[in-house]
Length: 185
Image (tube, rainbow, N blue to C red):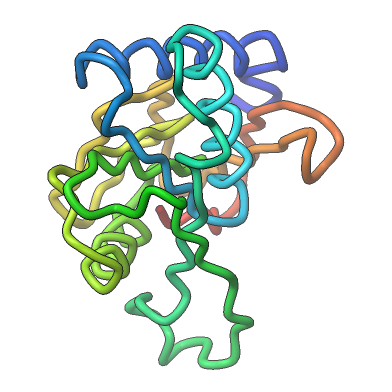
């Protein structure tokens, strides 16, 4: 099976559901901080934060959303040592004693999330860390599970899941293609 699996309305509904699930799981948003993993996790985190602010009075989406660059925490740096380092921006409320919700586009092997957990420990000590992903495609290599999933898409290892977002590619879509995937979250 190849082609577009999720379009813009599907992605919007999935992110709305994730925002509501975050609120339910945490009894509101008083201590919730979202950290998006660039590239596509960041705009997804910003969208989820905006959706939370629409239903949760007093939730400041910009003050509670940031970016977490994991480049130097990856376990494959020896294979590709020259990478540009991105920006980590910690929300103004910080992460100490907060519930940090990591946000990424695709959960695959779990290695990106392992790197993100290592990066978080260098920033502070959150009360809890939760994981929200737009797509969980399976094939874990590490014991990592998402708390909030937009869509479970069982795939074969030879398939690739590409997430396109308006902020980056000019459209919202989740596309399944044949070929070795680069999505290693």
